[in-house]
Length: 109
Length: 115
Image 1 (tube, each protein chain N blue to C red):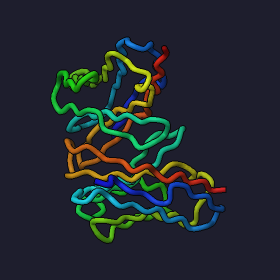
Image 2: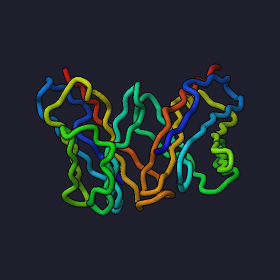
Image 3: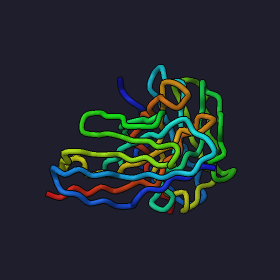
């Protein structure tokens, strides 16, 4: 099976940089994705890492290390609107996308 | 692009009743996923379809749950009979392709309350 672990909560101040970590256990996977969810609404796609290394999309970057079974989402220049839940998710063999429990990010002024 | 459309947005029903949740995926998308979200269990994959065919239903909790996709533009998730522990937000999502690099587009969910 597959399992993912992420911190339940992270707090940061506006303008700062925050890193949300994700560790996983799996027998095989294609890549690691990140999704954002505001107030229980529809999750929205942020990024995808198929290969090791850093992927950058504006203020957000995502990193994957297959050898360490580890990834992270990096949010820079934090804004109040970034307060949300962030989920890492594994694309497993067979086409299943399995989500972690989510990290609730609170951005303080 | 209207996005993934789910109905109803909210459903309140009594234990033992049948519940049917509906989903219209984005036109042209050929993969469809049903997820359930609760505080305790997070986002759980229930079942997913590729080209209207169920590929993996190992996440369906019990025989009380069933899902169908009669055509490319419509899917249903049925719970019969419903129980209070089924209370959750049910999300439908679609993607352009079946596979690892195709982002999922989620609907706004159906909040189900079973009393």
